[in-house]
Length: 115
Image (cartoon, rainbow, N blue to C red):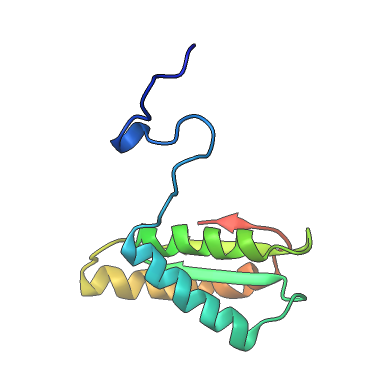
């Protein structure tokens, strides 16, 4: 198809040639920044076992972004544990007990695991 005379505005901007700049939602960017800080301070390129535990899709999106950008070896395993959003105190206690019971197995597992 022929390109329009004028570059479209809004959601279609950049559909040909140079793509439109994609930005992350602010909460995801905050999490990415925090995770990058932790990675820079405590991890190196040999870190192969990463476990993300959170109750929001924001954490899951951020860990995907951060680990994809830092993936230097094929040995990196990302284990994501998605908890219920806004649980009751009883549900939270049950989830945390379940995560505590699963944690040794998650650490020992050699590949990525979404839970």
